[in-house]
Image 1 (tube, rainbow, N blue to C red):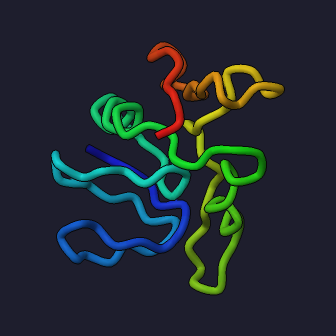
Image 2 (tube, rainbow, N blue to C red; image 1 turned 180 degrees about the horizontal axis):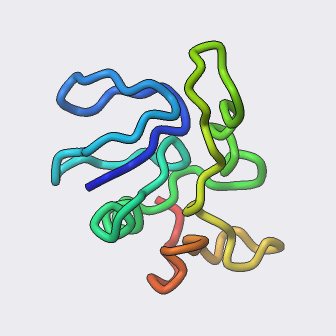
Image 3 (cartoon, one colour; image 1 turned 30 degrees about the vertical axis):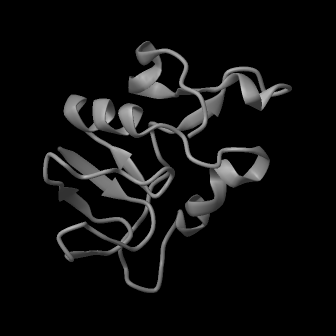
Amino acid sequence: MKFQALTDLYLNTGVYIQAGQVFDAPPNYPPPTNACCPLDPDAVSAYWEQGPRGCFDAECYRAQFTNGQRWSDVPIPAASTYWVPLDPTKPGLGFILSGTGSNYGPKPVV
């Protein structure tokens, strides 16, 4: 599974991933909501299976504060696949993935 980190994070194997870095994750990697962007079909599927976590109001965009050029010289593009509310006026109805994940359907907040 291939992801791009939107913020600095560690894999469950202890490997450090710098924001902006594209990385291959092991099959059992639980992709964190809004901290990475899935780049291939397996990654999108894993991202959808993990579900949105704590995605209410501005919380959905919490980890995207590092978008843009950082002190590390690693550019961090905006996510192309991310959770959006099914109905923005009723976030309790669940979320859907934007972009390449939009065909997966709605998912409740975990």
